[in-house]
Image 1: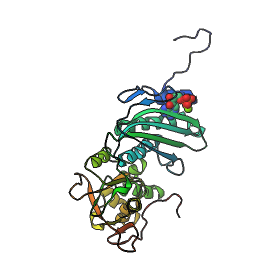
Image 2: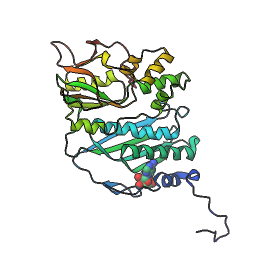
Image 3: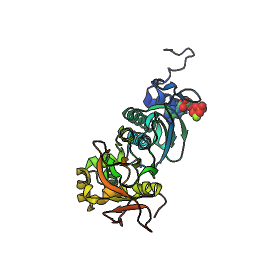
Image 4: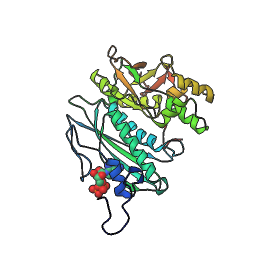
Length: 330
Ligand code: ADP
Ligand code: MG
């Protein structure tokens, strides 16, 4: 309708930037989304419907303002991208193919519709990069910005790769970045913006999309994504598999932005690689000779000796540095 029939002024331009209210926002968030591929019913109904090949792998991650992101350190688009990336990394870590996701947003009035629309743009950008379809979500008012993404993937007939499958003699290898996001966080905490690649890695992690499925195809015995720090996260594999993982410091070559940031911050770059989380690299255990191209060997797996507990060693000794992040730790 182009003109008012009742004498009222024409309705406001429904451009995305003017979207407001729950339904206006949802309309903007979901604009142009069409069911395709495995998805037969996308957004707009009470539930989405999609087909899956093999078993379903589900994972969810909650991002809370002030805990996982700060609106003065990250744009809304970066928050949206990060929320998708950290979730898809969990599917990759199972060796699954991403299929569909739902996104729930708690939005404080102070951030406004523009923040929400920029956030939604980030979600769509990263979903495209990761090859996952946005099929629904929920939108509500909240005191702090809260983002919950739930992702669903398929195993397509292959066994999922668990944390519990590492065996002695395995090679431990990593694909993706280590230490970048932690360096970025340390820079941001000191009000520094350079090296910008490290700061950008903290704002938007770049998990190695596709590498998890590749590792599964190569017969990886165990895998996870490094969300909290290499030593800490490999500890989960060691515990679940009842093995000792020995990380070889010589094999950890910090990338240039980590080295530069470490110099700026007066930190040891290797400790950023060993303890820094949030890059969502993949770490996996392979039989020798089965490590796919592009993966960096970082250590090896052996059986615990008599009286020894499963766990992670660095150069054969317990690691005394900061091995990773624990929300409820000290
Ligand atoms: P209901 O009242 O049935 O829960 P809603 O009004 O919450 O439905 O949502 C309407 C449609 O919009 C649903 O298909 C829902 O999945 C989708 N939706 C709501 N919020 C979002 C969002 N933030 N991102 C993507 N889709 C969303
Ligand atoms: Mg709802």
